[in-house]
Image (cartoon, rainbow, N blue to C red; front, side):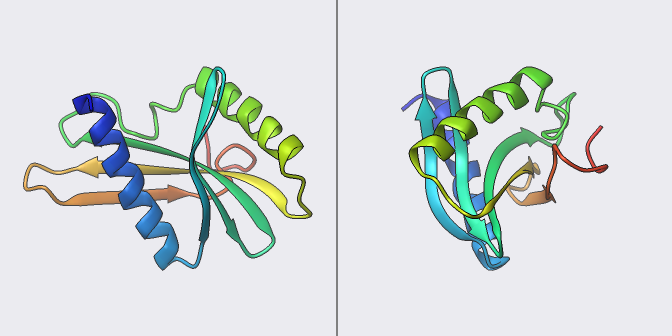
Amino acid sequence: MADNVKKGRTAEEIAAAYLKRKGYRILERNYQIRGGEIDVVAEVGSFLVFVEVKERKASAMVSPLESVTRKKRELLLRAAEVYLLRRPTQLQPRFDVVGIVRERDGSYRITHIENAFGGGTWR
């Protein structure tokens, strides 16, 4: 497995464990369609949550949250639309972003933005 893929999977595992501790029920990981992927699909309360996970070193020029570009958001939206067509639900869809910063000592800092694309918390 390529090093970047391995790091991405590790970040997704960290994010999934974090979300579980917050009461999310993980439904799927790495849901893929042609041209897009959703890292984590989860349920919490009345929401079906599509989660984008980004990880960066503490020394990176761009934070993990800043690396979720407009193009990436469009791809996530398209993948979520396909997911909902294939798996209809009464739950309200929502997009969250989990940013993971890897420190030099191997520890992690996690930032979780709920409703990242629909509220005032995203630039």
